[in-house]
Amino acid sequence: MTTQIIIATGAFFGMLAVIFGAFGAHALKKILTADQLQSFEVGVKYQMYHAIVLVSIGLGFNTKIPSAIYWCFTLGVILFSFSIYGLVLTAAKGKKIKILGPITPIGGLLLVSGWGLLLLQVL
View: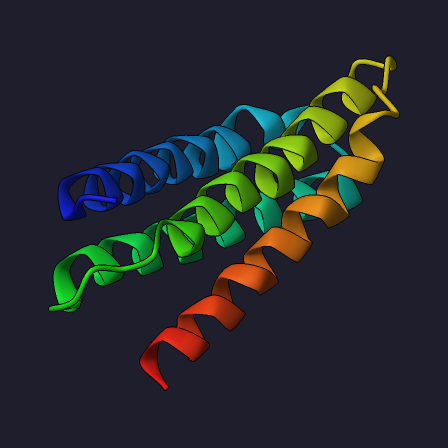
């Protein structure tokens, strides 16, 4: 995986996290319950954390990072954060897409796996 792709993915996730965070704080604040808003914010936080990690990995490593780390973080963000966004937004409309529920922990497992692989890489 090239450093340019890693940094670009992190920058894209970071940009979306800022947009989604602002959207949640302003537009969604009026239509979501406090619990739904808190869940939405968890998705945004985890997305931003991993955006920062991807950019840091892209900028900070002198050796090639295994693509498995990149894919764990990238797919983990998509499955974890985006499933939370989908669950919250569809629940707010009264049409919760329940299939997204089991996807969230799969994304979380991928995020944990990415961290584990990163730990192994630096050890």
